[in-house]
Length: 338
Image (tube, rainbow, N blue to C red; front, side, top):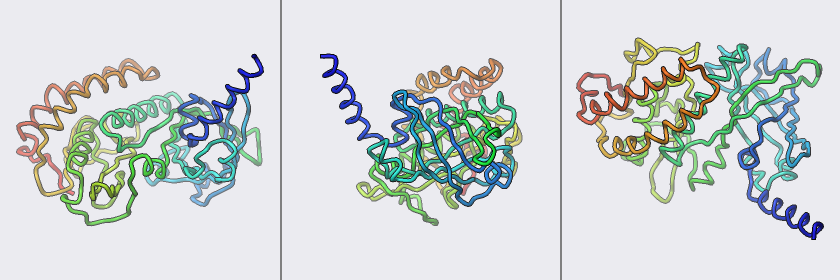
């Protein structure tokens, strides 16, 4: 009986794994640590955008598994200001096949710790992950994220080792597959080409978290997902580190848009029209308990920072919601057209 139970358990785990991507494996198995062996001089010192070979080690069911991959530096502003730049990892599909059933989802962005000050890095990453999770509550057309600790080891000098927190973002291909859409690089779209509800939810969410760092017209921090069934585009936001909710030490104010303080909210509208937000505002009021639950789950940030975030969010609900409902936010000319 014991032998049969062991075989049955192993078989069921194998069946489940067949439905997993690498991201799913991290999530479902609650994997908290991975190791990346790569040329750290290329990544950290030279900040090279050229892919360099890497080996990724992950422990599943007590066994240390090795995956082949390439890794390179990505991003623009964070690459300039970060001590440790953001990365992109591209797994070998043949290597993923040994571990998961969906090796086609092979490319992932890694939001790294950025700053040498690990305490600040942990806080910033947890806040940015919380923003992604809050956006997941708003819409399924959003990137899932997994918080993890990564040990980076130099392939030439194993004594050069860095262990730090990170966020791994769901692959583009998996989001496309999950939402039955296709990301399209396109410019010059008009308002009638978008799903109105999704667009207005994006605008309202970015206003709530104090994020003006997005631009549909040039594709900055928002991707266009073509959904064939609807014959419409759905905007998918990402990269929230410049929002007031996160407020990192390297926060850049958008003074050209009228932002003078870290907590100034700027309502950004990509088209020359006033959105009708009543239904969206009711929806966001319904989501408030879920947002609060995510905020409470942030266990690594200082109490002073937690209080700052609570005040910032309460201001949105207790003051700005009424302004948006009465369109005072537009009458005050705080709307920005892009």
